[in-house]
Length: 305
Image (cartoon, rainbow, N blue to C red):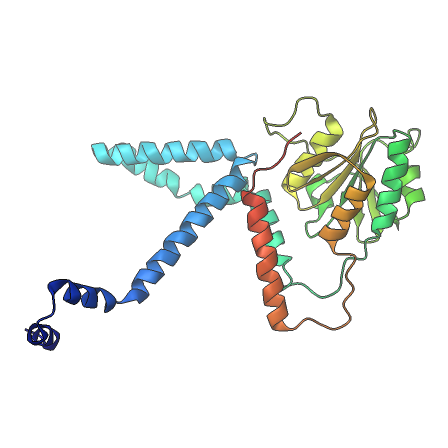
């Protein structure tokens, strides 16, 4: 009998008091570690499923899960030949996943790398007013347009199309590009910082099945590009003159000029111009806040029009 049992016996305490004491003396470190690990895995799996479910590779995920189920069934039935073949097939799974989901992984890493902890203090020099003024003018005259505002992912590497301009970002320049008789009006423009880099670009169309069938090519191209990159895409409908913007695969239709300006200002943070550098603690706080916004945005159901 150990010393604690002797003490409890001499004190004539009820048995449940001894049980409570043993429960208090448990090593809570490994329990807490297990809870944290399970919670992290649950959030990570749920987050990845929500991210992949809205991507082009979702059918591949379903097929992969079916393959895992078949492998488990074969292992339970002890079919050695089939089990060996499937094990060899799984050797190529990691490489296949990296190739198939390369756009999604790159966009995720780009968003994480864009956190204040890893980024510089200099804000984007994008002239939001130039984009908004051009969008307003094009919408009033019902001139179709699609403008992709590049962030961290090189859009030109994704599209491999377009005519190099590298011109100043002005409302007049955007108007002249999308003028119906302009040789560059058919396609989209790529805006990088304060420059119009490319015009007449062909953007990839989305392949999602949950997109409204009434959407035209411009809107489908905007959704497709925002799925492949972290770009913000502004669209003007030629038929109705409605303004829309798309980011991270979510299309926001029929927005006002003010709503567009507020979104671009908030997303690109052009309204902040700090003089002093942020401390490391401030960077960590901002990064955790932005990371929470990213996770909340990914887990929140998106509005599709």
